[in-house]
Length: 258
Image (cartoon, rainbow, N blue to C red; front, side):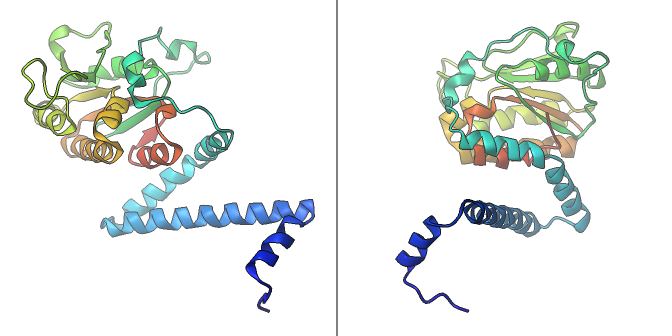
């Protein structure tokens, strides 16, 4: 039966609901919003021409990360402070991180064509993962404001694409660090025989300088380039540098999120 009471009356009576009914109402609204988001994501993937098998893999990957996304959402509701995107300028390198894991823990396998997103406030696990995986690739490319030192890797095997905050397109004082310029400089090493292992820890800077949409397009292009050339990508990113919805959107593009 249709409720013919004025909207104001319905809202007032809703505020007078018993505690258990109020809880059920809040849960139902959250459940509905979750379904809407899931269906929107499915429609978005389907509109891109993915095959049924690709859609299945995408959905399984999202389900595997569901508990992590719920935890991120819970923390966001507690109003954590959002760090500015330029916080990447202060992300110095701490000691090795995998060594602090439980006994017997080993870095995950970095396969050709794979992309990893490492959630960490400062580059640590991503550096160690890059060092461990470097033996599988002919060349290693560092895209960073502060390129880390990779112990045990021959210097001639490493290329550095410095992200220079002061540089602007056409600025003779420094190389162009725009996403378009970085993409052009990444083509050669990734398309060379044997591909490349690409390490990137300056995504926050790209967001701050060029906007979230431009940074996303660069990330999606790079992940596609990695897949097409049999290279691999390891990205270190502080989740607090992005809005929750933006971070959730970004992590779906990666094969694995740690």
